[in-house]
Structures are given as C-alpha cells and as structure tokens.
Image 1 (spheres, rainbow, N blue to C red):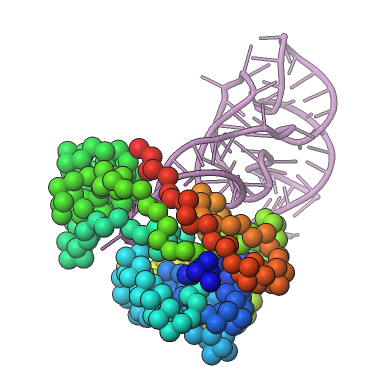
Image 2 (spheres, rainbow, N blue to C red; image 1 turned 180 degrees about the vertical axis):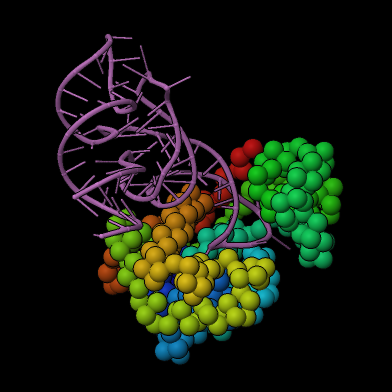
Length: 319
RNA sequence: GGCGGGAUAGCUCAGUCGGUAGAGCAGAGGACUGAAAAUCCUUGUGUCCCCAGUUCAAUUCUGGGUCCUGCCA
C-alpha cells in the first residue's frame, strides 16, 4: 500500500466542479479537504467565493476556510505553512488529505515548495508605504536599476514584484532572480494531481449559470455587508472578484444586467488565467476531461499508482 | 411633417485637408517563487451603410436612397 498517494490534489478553473468531486472522494476514501483558494480563507465571502454549503461542511471536514478577517493581509507563504500543517494533521489521524482549489500559485507552492527566501513583514510594510503607489514606483525603478539590473529588467513593469525583489535584496544583498534559480523545485509529495478540463463553451455556460445562481442566492446582500466593512480598501481581500462590480450596481452606476455581464466576463478571464497556469505550471498534473464518470475516477484511485511525482520538477526559470 | 447629428473591427468610437484605416473594451496566446479571484506582456483586414457622379484614385467630395438618433411641431 506504500504505492498509495500521500495526498490528492484537485485543481482546475473556477466552476469546473472541484469541490463536488473532492467531497465525493473524501467520503469514499476517508479523506478531509484542504481548500487551496486565496479568497475562501476569509470569513464572510461565502456566496461570492462559492464556499461549500453548511451541509457539505457537516459531511466532510474542511480545512483552510474562514480563518481570517477581511482586513488581514495574506500571502502564499501563510497559506503554505497552514496547508503543510493541515496535511500533517490529517495524515496523523490516518486520513487522506485532499487539496482542492483554483489558486494555482498556492497549489504549486505546496507541491514544489517555495525557495527559502527571507521575508520580513515589517520591512515590506515600510517598502509598501514608500513605493506602492504611482509616484513611488518611478523611484523604485530608479533604485532597483542601480541595485540589481537583473531584477529590474525582469520586473520593472510589475510594481509588486519589484517591491518583493527589493525586500529580498535588502535582506540578503542578492538578486531574487539569482536566488530563485539556485535549485530546481521538485515534487515534495507523492501526490495524485488532477486538473479538471471542460470544453470551452461548456465552461463558459457553467460560469454564466453559476453567476446567476449566486446572485439569486443573495450575493448582493453579502457584498453590501462586506463593502460596509470596507472590503474595497483592504490590503488583500479587496481583490476578490465581483464585489467592486456589485458596488457599482449598488451605487446606481450600472444596471443589474450590466453587473451580471461584467461579473461573468471577469470570471471567464479568471478561468482563462487559471487554465493557462495549470496547463503550463503543473507537469505533474493529469488532465481529466469533464464530465468524467465518478466511478472511473474512483477506480483510478483504488488501483493506486496514479501519482507521477518521481520525474516531475519545474523547469529552470527563464531569464 | 420641419431642421439637425450619425452610419468605420464582436461593442463604444477616433480618423483619413481624396492614395483602401486605428484606439479602448471584448476575444485569443503567454508570463508568474511572500497581495495570485491579483499583476503584467503579446496579438487588430474590417463589403469604412447602399447606388450613382466627379477623379488617375473615393471610406473620405457631390447627389440620391435606406436605417438609427436629437430638437421643434
């Protein structure tokens, strides 16, 4: 039985049916679910992030849901530490960890680890204050051009990434680009990784249908509440899709139909980025053409040896 | 009915003092190692509404037509 995977990962774009599949697998294989979703980590964004229902939460234990308030700042590293701890916890209790979510960056960091580069929240907060605005960006570029031309070349259009590069440079005296190239990330788990893939138009239809359902389920009231709590000005949670569009509707700037259309469009754009990510960043993943009968997938797991981590590593970073 | 404005990329529109045209959005592809549901990069041939006229040459000028739209009746 040593051939069995240590963890199962179900990835894919939004509205691809990850949660549903994870739930069935968890029930049939004595598992618990770890959400790999940057926004489900927050309390209050239930409908808007399509969190599992109370009933589903009752059936199967879920981890990494509702752990933070909306005004708290999050990042991959925080997720990574929590997810690693959750895996250890679940396995210690003899259960199967099932990671399910659409935040590819988080999933990859869990599977391959993050280079042990230093981070200093206090330093970064200072850098944010100094450079994370249009005026500061110009100064940041000038500074980085002098300090480290490799980082500057790579990131001079991404303010945030340049700030992180500066942070690492200040802590180590070295270029983040250089440090990231030091070792090749390899799979750290014996994992079965599935990437759910739908035919394009079908996924679009699912997104449209689900958006309508979410709005009918009370998303607008939920958003109004989050907005009154200031979500639009929070450091991380303000990036959630939908809420600022709903805000425009609440302000009377756009019609209901327009709001719904814009949400569907943004959701599709998200899905496309996710598809690009899973297509190119996950050599270990097996693509599952949806819809696929659950029985077929369950059989795959029972047969074991579905993981293929041994030969998987991420390609060298391009210069 | 009268007097205007408009008709150009899937959408909103710019432009061509006559040499067959370009932005934003959408769409497509890509990147991504501490904000990732974010951020960024690449990618634009379409009867320039129709017909006739002037011209070497008309989407651009002239005339007629069709369809939108504003104000007055």
